[in-house]
Length: 439
Image 1 (tube, helix red, strand yellow):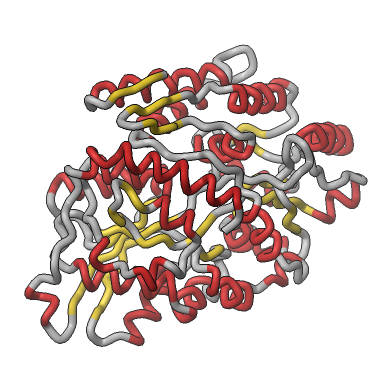
Image 2 (cartoon, rainbow, N blue to C red; image 1 turned 90 degrees about the vertical axis):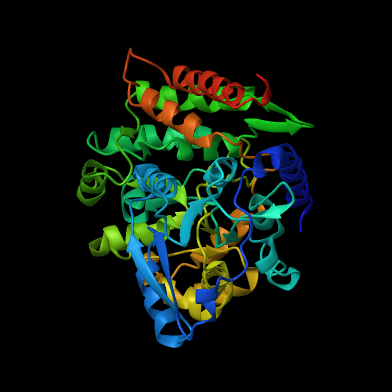
């Protein structure tokens, strides 16, 4: 583990300590129920990640003792998390759910998940990146099985860049210069998009810049979503919007997709999983796209994490052992990762390092002209900026920022206003929950 990852883990461990009081309300890990003694156990799984159905089909075909019923739900921020929360409250939740790292503390603090520590042995946890284990460990307990890491990446139309003589930017200053050049060469084209519906993309860029929104010291949460690094990112993107250098479209919306198809947008600031999204969304543009490291502020490699999935067992499941067994198969076996990526729509970057060669082999890189995109992800993963931790109220933070981002227009509310509103709402929510807060 690199020094930067050690520092990251130390911060997250501190956050986990502060969450210890919260995890008391989480469901306790249940011993396999009587129904797990049957010859075949049926479990339910909700998720949205690309390739999930193919993974379930492959598991069911190769296992007789456990069978999985899969239901595809909207992505978390598009309604999936609300659906999971409502199901838990109603007492009819599935056994296993997909939850991204940023939202895991929220679900744990609400008592929606089971402690699965008793089902994750050290030899299993050692398969994963230490930071992925730390992100799923709260209050000294394991609450989910990590699946992928999600370092940032910049996807761009290499044919259009070449046509207009635009160099791939290595710094954010160069990104703006490239954006200006793209617009000048083609007044209808833009280099990328600001996603008003997706605070996580903004958060990843703040993370990359060195921001630290949540910090736990003892039993106190220190909250600052408006630190110097975040303010720099806010001002930068506000400038791009004010000067009409990037689009302002909802992520994965018809407007965003159509703009990519027409050549109106020729770049995408995303994460490792974005490679599969583009290939699946724009199959007709195969061979025209390439992947580069995210631009950074000083030109040195740096990345945040954008999303990243885990699998967690809901509090009322009576089939914990079977659910965890399926989760482990998805995350630690070559058959599991190959089934997901062979679908042609997933470019998952496994948290289990030993599975990355299998992931690379399974992904059809012809869409990117045969480029070794997994090496780009590997380098980006090694450059993830330390000192970021997620707090226990990410849902509130993101909902408020998303609402305010929707008001960002020229002369209207600003990105800085939105982030400030998120700060105030977060502090208020944590105080409402009876937590000690500074911010």
